[in-house]
Length: 219
Image (cartoon, rainbow, N blue to C red):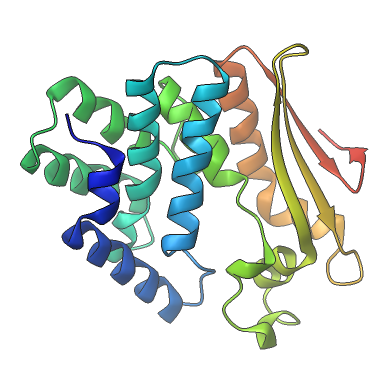
């Protein structure tokens, strides 16, 4: 069976992730390199582990998280669908069984808020992990904070935690936002669609989604 460890160390896949991030850098996007994809991979796996899914499903979620953004090396527009096709091809070449291929390709193809929906446990976990990765270390150039809302909002987030409560069946994204850098309204301006997608992903598992900013629950 193909494993996350093999995918993470694969030179070809590493190069595609590297180039995807380089191309996004050229057009002014925040960091989408190894720090992002490794965090998404581990968080997606932890979500399914916490929810009691078996080790194989956890591995699929981690692999989907690691390769979910490789479509950016083709174009940012429709990167989820391009990434799904690339992921399918790469993983099939490495001997992944059809059922697992379908699970990962479907998750990658549905991770963007413009067109995606949670269609499986792997897909829902990927959505939650990806959309909750808001942090100031994703900023490439601090000089852009005053002019670029995405950089400003990410820089304003000084702490971010995604918490699953199995008792209350609640998934909460808890943020600390420096309002001297960016207002809470600006966060909603660019991330509302992502938060609504997280809500759908949480509901897939039978959970509620909550957004807590500076100890105030807003969703």
